[in-house]
Image 1 (cartoon, rainbow, N blue to C red):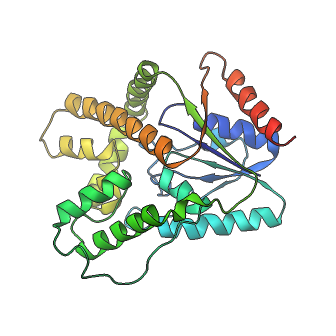
Image 2: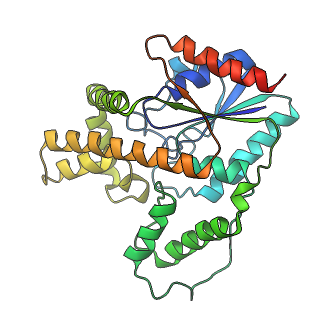
Length: 291
């Protein structure tokens, strides 16, 4: 079976994925677009080696910061891993908050590889990018590359208009979403940012700033873009941290909207005082479906 664990940032997706992987002897596939990249650890809240508890993880740390990696690339890689693990009769857990990665992998999501250079030529790059972000808030397409902007928008609209993404390609799939009330979620997000700062987020951001602050993969990473502005002496350190918290909260809100509109998810309220209660509720749901 395939278990998908998703939801907004800071709700315990990593912890649940490890517990279910131990329970079902499963391997984990990362579904976070930032965790694909090497050394982007603190900003992405990447699972640590200690947290993995020996569980095999796929599609973590597979690209350098300056390498392109599209949704199409992820679709090919993730489906290849799923096919391999299913042939070995392994259970699979997909975990992360990048909804389009999940959608493109598990559903009949198609990519148009033709050059449609004449379409949308009446739109500016800014207008194209705005339309793309409305459909995929996590897009990392180059804002200044007109051809890539057009191609990405065509792919996104093509799937939306033709309902390609409504057909599930795999059997025995469970879509699990973790959630909590908004006030608590926002507090957890704010606290997590403070912990990230304590754990060295500034040093991590400075490392990439010195490498290439204009690299495409870095521009949309919450935690880097705000600190880059601080390093440029445009804002204070305190203002940058406040912006990280604010942008993280807004991102969580966009995640909720995307998942509720695009996927059929079974939501579970997280018991942060006793996470085992949450894990057990999810297991009961999965076991009931397997009866």
